[in-house]
Length: 302
Image (tube, rainbow, N blue to C red; front, side):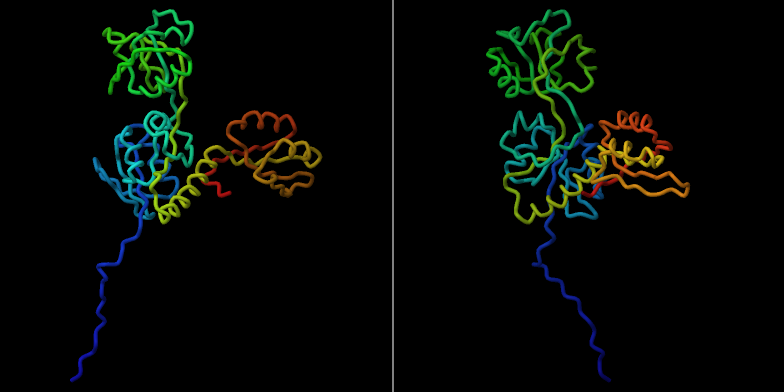
């Protein structure tokens, strides 16, 4: 009796696995949450176990490394990670040689100089010879140098806002978001040295293969960012006022105009930038637009 030959599946253990792009993200805090949110909006799902150093995407060739914000520039420089979502302020302080591929528009903050509320402040020259506590010595030194001021810097990794209260410093330089921390410590913001937001930074050692993956990611990110800045608007307009209304609308190319079932009326569809949204809506109403419907946009593929 002859044997029926079976199909034996062979596995090549030497076959290379799929190349993944390695991204660094701050391991905790607001920047961590907003970074994961933009990846999610880009359709990238992360298998994220709690307190993990590393995680992978289920549906995109991506590995996520959760790292301390201040360490990320060196990881980029060494090629340990290929890209990172990081605060622009950290790159100014520790990674001016790192390339920024994209500004992301979230986690906005300022790097500012602050003094006790009781101090009468006139100008940056008031910092001459003063003691300044900071976690951003390079940023402070460069700013003071540009303004011809010499001061004594005390480098603190941690809560710099307490330094004036305990007599360690006359002033501080720190990140300011809402200003509540300064207020609680009886300090006032007097100089804004830098306005910062999250950026997509790229390692100088990224491979050509991973650059292709980065290009796909950037395409998705731009679509998401564009959508966040825009609103989809539908409105009804009498035909005799249509030209005036269309002149108010920017649109991606030009507004879409469709006839309504009721004679003499048209439906107009367009996209409006969020920054100028209310001004445009007010002008549309004055021009005769009715039944204005505003919708959020999930993605915008240009």
